[in-house]
Amino acid sequence: MFFYKCRNCWFSIDIKCAHLSSSFKFSQLSKHDIHRHPLSFIESPMAIYVLKRLNCCWCHEPLIDATYFCSDCPSFIIHKKCLDELPTEINHPSHHIHPLSFRYTDRNHFCNLCQKEHFGAFYGCSLCHFNINLECALLRSIVEDKSRHQYPLTLFWRQDSFICDACGTEGNYISYTCSTCFTTVHKKCISLPRIIKFSRHDHCIFHKYFLQTQELTKQDCKICFKEVRLERGSYSCGKLGCNYVVHVNCVLENQWLYKVIEDEKQYEELKEKSMQSSIIRVIEVNEAGEAAKIEHLSHQHCLVLADKMEEEIDRKCDGCMLPIANIFYYCSECPFFLHKTCAELPRIKQHWFHQNNGTLNFDSFKQCAFCYRDCSGLFYKIGGYWDMCTRCAKVADIIECEGHQHFLFFDFKYREKCNGCGELNWDGAFRCGKCRFALDFGCLTLPHSALHKIDEHKLKLTYHDDKEQSYCDICEQYRDPSLWYYSCSICDTSAHIECVLGQFPFIKDGSIVPYYCRKHYCALKFFRKVEGFPECSRCGKFCQEEILKCEKSTCNYIVHYKYECRRGH
Image (tube, rainbow, N blue to C red; front, side, top):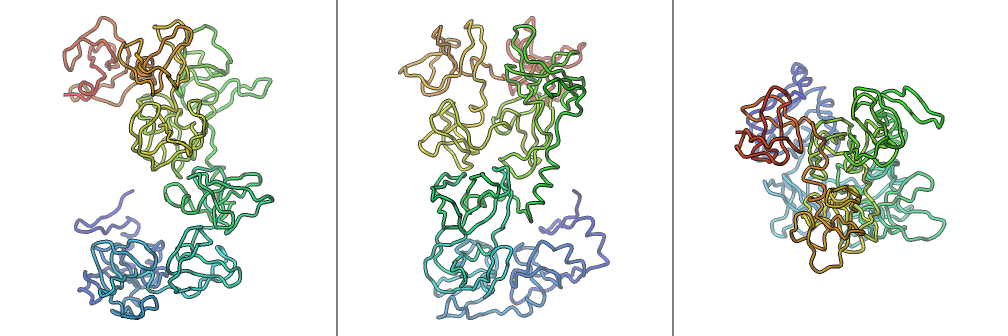
C-alpha cells in the first residue's frame, strides 16, 4: 500500500518500519575498500523484522545482526561481521592454479560453478576468465535438511559430468552426493521445495527422487509431454489414483505458477477458504435436491431454475453470453438468464494460468485478457491484473477439441499462428504435442452453433474445408479454406466467423461501457442497432452499425463504437 521512497535511489521503506526510526539507525559510510559504491549501515534489533526474507550474500544466513547494503546494487547485502572479514583475494578449490580476486561489475557475469548469469559482486581470475558468484565462493561442505533429504549431502568439487538425481538433468561441475543412498544432485537442487501447489493441478504435488509403481510404465510430463524417467527426480501428485507427474524444471520454470506449501494441511485450509459459492442464498430446493430458487451475486432479483424456454427464442446467458441450450436460471421480473453451470461458479477460483486466486465479479463491460474480446457478464479478476471471461475460465489446460484428433495442452512459450483464425499468438496457446497444430483462447471459446438470417438452419462451427477456393456467402469475399468457419450442410452455406457472429457477439445490448468522451461525461450504453440512422456526434456520419448512446433518455448524444469515435475529441 503506502510507503516512503528515496528520490535518488531504489531504497523504499514501509510506513510501519519508518515509524520505528528510533529503534534503528541508517548511516551513510564512505566507499568501502571491497565494494565500489558507498554502503549504508543498519544497526537495529528490528532488522530481523525488516529483512527477515533476505540472507547475507556471503554466509547465506538470515540478516539478524548489523548489516551493510548498497543502494546501487540490490544483490549486495551483507552482515557487518562478514564484510569486515571478507577477503579481497581467495584461494578456491575449484581453481587451484591462480587466486581469485574480489570484483564488481554492472553487467551480468557467468558463474563457472552454478552455470548461471549473476549481477554484481563476484570472485574471478582475469587470466583464465574463471568467475564464481559470492554465493558459490563459500559453499557448505555438508548440508543436513531432513525435510528435503533423509541423509546428509556432502560437497563434491570434482569437474565431471553427471545426471542430477533430484531433477533428472545433466550437470558438469559442482555437485552434492549422499554416501548412504548414492544420489548426486546439483547445488541448486539441495533446496528444492518438498511440497508445492501448482496452479495447473488441483492437488498438492510432492518431490520424489524416484517413482515407485506396481508396473514399469511410461509416464509423460503433464507440462511438456516428454517422458519422465521413473528413476530420476520429479514432482508427482500425492492423491491415491492420481497419475499427475511433471519434470522438476518444467514445474519450477515459472514462479507465478506455483506456491511452496509447508504441509498438506495448509493447502487444504487454503482450498476450503477459496471454495465460496457465488450463490448468495438458496431460497427453495426441488425434489431432486437442486437449488430451485436462489439469490445470486450477479443480479438484484431472485432467480428460478428451469429446463427449457417457454418460447422458441434465441436467448443468451448473461454470465457467459453463449446461447441458452440446457438447464438454466431465469429472473421472473426482468429478462435475465444464467446457465446453471455459470450460476454455480465459485466466487473465488484458483485458475491454472496463475497461482493467485481469481475473484468472480459481474461487470457490464470489459475486455477479456485471454480471448481479447469485448464482453459483458461474469469475469474473474486474476492476480489483480487480468480479467478473464467465464468462457475462458472454463477451459482446462489440457483439452480435447473437436477440430483436432489429438489432445492439446497450453504452452506459455508458443509464439506461432493459431490454426483456427490464423492470428499470431504472443502470450502462448494450446498446442498439440504430436503435430504442428495450435489454438488460442478466442477460437476455443467460440459457440459451436449460431443463427444468421442468411440461413433458416443453425450454422455449425466447421474445422475443415476440402475446397481449393472458398467464398463467404454473407460478405461474398474470399474465405481461407484452411481456417475455421460456420456452415450449413443442408443448404451448402458457408461464411466467415466474424460475418456470422458480428464484431461484438459477447456484449449485451444496453451494457454500460467504461469509455467517456471528453465533451460528454455521462455513462454510455452499447447498442447494435439504432432506429432512424442518426448522425454520429463525433464524426458527423450516419450510424448504421454498433453505437454508444447516452444512458439519459433526454440526451441525444450518439457515437460510433469504432475506436476513433468512442475515444472522444
